[in-house]
Amino acid sequence: MQDIITIDGPSASGKTSVAQRVAQHLGIPYISSGLLYRAVALLCLLENVSAEEIEQHLGKHRLELKPTPGQNLVFLDGQEVSEALHSLEVDQIVSAVAARPAIRQYVNEVLRQIPPPFVVDGRDMGSTVFPQARYKFYLTASPEVRAKRRVPEREASYETVLAEILRRDQADQQQSAPAQDALILDTSNLDLDGVVQAVLAHITPAPGGPITK
Ligand code: C5P
Image (cartoon, rainbow, N blue to C red; front, side, top):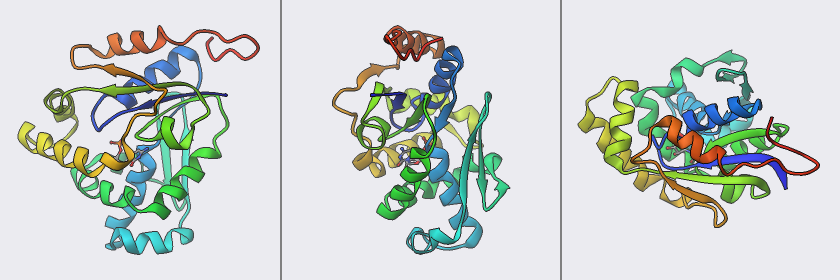
């Protein structure tokens, strides 16, 4: 078992904010795995090529994720692209990018090179990428609640954001099943602090290798 905490869940379930806060509380880095898929999606947009084409030429590019206390910085071929990863354009193509097996393998290799301890959020962190994680959580919330949370972060209406979330839920279904040993938390009726407290309540110091402060 490794000092890794996985926080998985569908889009806009709050997993990144929760992962950030939990990591901050524990004094360890957090990693948002979705950013790496978003960076590959951005590469498709910049080069005006399909996910299939990028999959074949991924070896030519360099993708790096640097966790800093406040945020994750993402570098594409040495250039920082973090700010450009959360547009509606990226949202619209990222699922197609993430569906390509060689792209998943590439992203998983980048993630597995990061030394623990850390908190990582995504879809399949607990089930596939870090099955040896010490703690696993899976956040859920209704699509309507998730859309309301996401609207302030996008230049789009509630209806557009909700439609996008429903489409992405469908497209991401395959890699989004919770790990069998994950704790499932429905966050529909909780605010951010409530979810963070619920997660921290399950994390206890372990003898010989505490993950907590
Ligand atoms: O978490 P976030 O919404 O930023 O992820 C963006 C997209 O990346 C998801 O919609 C999904 O298609 C993909 N993703 C994935 N596996 C992960 C993380 C993200 O397939 N572990």
